[in-house]
Image 1 (cartoon, rainbow, N blue to C red):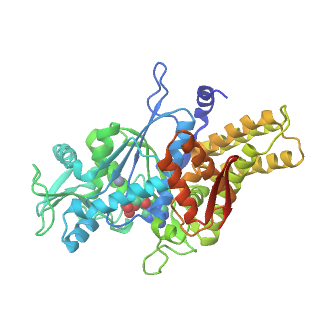
Image 2: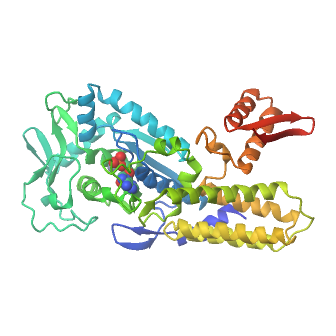
Image 3: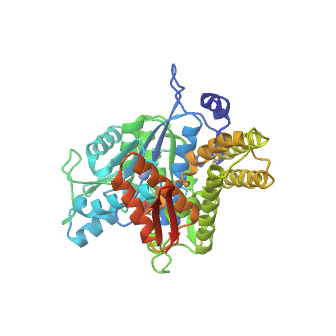
Length: 487
Ligand code: AMP
Ligand code: ZN
């Protein structure tokens, strides 16, 4: 199949539900491609606030964004994607002060942990991963632009955004501004819809708090201005897509729109995609209920990155995801089924020729892509994958599958996995210690080891042998190749 044809024929079919309009709309990037270069989609994602380890609810949203990236790429687009690390906000200032650490020292550990977790879940690195504290001058410049247009006022050394001067305020979250007193202010970064007020762009220095000297006085940026400044710096004044979890729609994204559009007079983001929340066993995830899980908690219980990624990806992002351990177990079996299928494809001997399986694979690839084109309907995309696995296994069981079909099935799996990213057994290596490895996983690791030995990478081959040993798998090298058994 020709990739550029896939892109050209299908990208007009790509549809997303846009929080801004409340409708499902056809998506195409603002700027068309130029001579020989496909169009580029410019995306901004609100990244983690690094005051603690990210929890699996956060990763629900980050996995959705990764699926978005990967599907856009599969459709032939170039990507320019920015994610920020919020390393200054109320909670960070408070926690860093309590720990007696500088902002950098306090946040660094959580930022690094976030990168590790991203790698574990096969989340692609956005083209720009940027930190708020590296962009304070950009934020100050944006505040000055707003001040010149009289969108700001000062009170007790802090600068506020005057929402009464921005009539479109509330268009994203559809908030009713009826009862709001002009001049009523809010200083905290996070607040409820009922408290919609003028919000702080720049907060005056307080004793004991980290601050920056700036032309707008000594102080620190509010949370909202961070994202407006970083998004426009890297992506221009109008972005194609802005994403985040649904809790960010108000006030954070509403305020981003107000700041950016007041400054530029242009639409800030054309499409707003918000992921619904992950909840746990039917309840809100919270520390007090004891149902608050980080990725690390799940790894420590023996769960693998592939199963977690699969589970988080399996529910379409606009639907709430109810996390249960039974669901996680099922996700692990689904991944295993896929890996076993690929192993069967690679190891069984089929007679020469071709069969209807080739056409069946082509249909499945089309159904998979069409489901994702439909506002990233991952549940339907997975149904297309498993229908293909079921039908092909049936072909094989009946002896109808042919050697000439293998390439088409391999190609289909590769296309699925370019988005799902769960097939590679290596991603689970070193995780879920104590958990049993499946036969398929052992085989995948052994073939990896074989390849390492062939290129004389004995360090890697020993690592794999040790990893297998930790899982009770004994490898024996014979003149006919490697054999293994469970100890
Ligand atoms: P934060 O670090 O609080 O700024 O959140 C990082 C991302 O996780 C944001 O996009 C949030 O909207 C998202 N998020 C927070 N809690 C949940 C949850 N329970 N389910 C899904 N996404 C969430
Ligand atoms: Zn943000």
